Length: 296
Image (cartoon, rainbow, N blue to C red; front, side, top):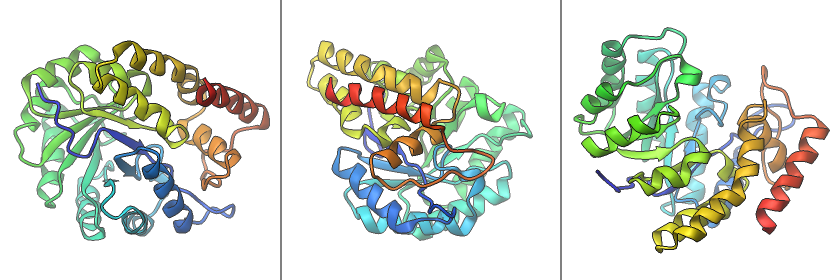
């Protein structure tokens, strides 16, 4: 089992700020990145699910990495999402992320085509071989339709550049099996698992909710690290209503996160179609639960 955290412990799956007209807002991205790092984020994961990667261009993805790298310098790691349903395209994005200054790449299982496990393994190895950057495997079968099975994960762990997993599998038993048998760093990708996975040897989290409460989520890990399990549990529980409303109330986390950030005066802007902004009633509900989280 490993407790190594190659990109830090507290990572934010950062939204991609857009202008009200829907253009990429690089100034806003730099402002938000600085804000998150100054409030406890060890790393930022760009162009993932929360970052609306399916609706940003290759040029926008590269520009985002460059801008965020400039904003945070060496204060935080920058991990670039490069996973697509096309191996050749993912290879291209990995190489571009490396040139743009990323510290690692996040590679999701190819979606829609649902490759079998041997093809899935080859896909990840091909992307890992394409650059010198360490790779985070992104296991989110609810969106991709394909699970990275435990045996596949263990074989992939033998690759020198495949170092971590963002775990959105909702299979806690499988996560513990792979933790026990490999040196892969496991990051919770579902905020309700942040403390639980960390407690059994996980590396930390890659969190959507950290966009709006970075300090509060960091405090959960800090308390556990300090040996105060009751306090860490209480802090995790305090965040649970916000986690539920942002991630499990029927709207994508991107939508709820941008709604809150806009209300808090932080860069976010609109979402790109087919997503639509949250309505006023939803926003008011989010704000109320957010206030309870940060004032509790």
